[in-house]
Length: 150
Image: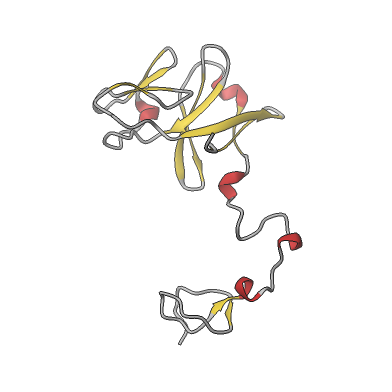
């Protein structure tokens, strides 16, 4: 029996959803060389354009979406385009509605302070840093992707 959650399925497998089928790519119907993207490559590994670079010139905090995640964009005082999660790691506050203090954003809910470029906690009550995103500017557009582990 085929589960309603399964799509593009053929052959037989024993998945947790209880279907008696398996994805066609698992049967070898899709090779890595057949397309630029494979089932093993996450869209988060590619840069995606999210905003015109000119929209950051005045030092504002901008909220954008990437793969369903809210991201806070800002230009640092040195001119670097920075991106961290727009959702505070303390209690989920909207950092894009917070105040900017130099290269630090202050959460409007409880006052946690985060470095705009590294996501590091500069003052509590938060104890966990903000997830960071890599940025680049190409053809006047800010592009971002999830930061890779160093």
